[in-house]
Image (cartoon, rainbow, N blue to C red; front, side, top):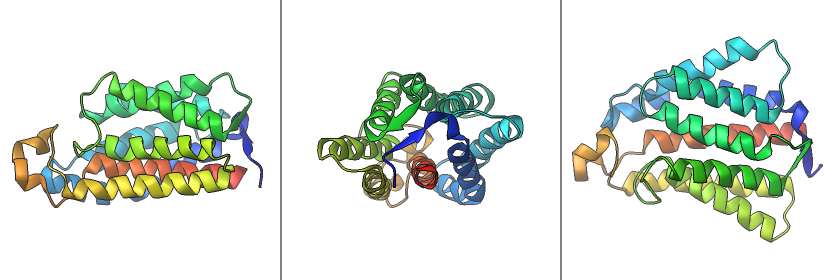
Length: 213
């Protein structure tokens, strides 16, 4: 299996991400409804489906797809998650937009750029029961994989495991931000919807990349 993929051939990765959100629309709504307002699945599905409709018949690269999806999420879906995901995806895309081939190191740098962009607009950090608890360990996992010289397949598998562990950790946390923060201790015992959707997106991205290596 190759340790790089062509940026220009990244369309299937984006479409895999779209399908994953669409398939989990109801589940995300259920998770969000336990301690939030229940519209996370609907909003995310709207944004990803708009992207699919506009670009399903067009050719685009991996980074161009991330940029366009980010723009749609930033500008066209409701709630706080639109700007958050829009920023993550657009900053990640910018970090890799000049690349013809994307290596593990490049994907790591894109993740880092997305995380840094997120930290520029939110105060939440690891332990605050947000999508940061999924994205941060996923990014750190890629950094560790690069340090150890792991190939793409192993690095992506490790990333998915780290993201899942981070997602699951939110169940025992008390929410510090958003609507659920009003519940205080009552927010404990439920997964954070943003952490869940972030895992779904990252897992689908990883699976999509593995298919085109």
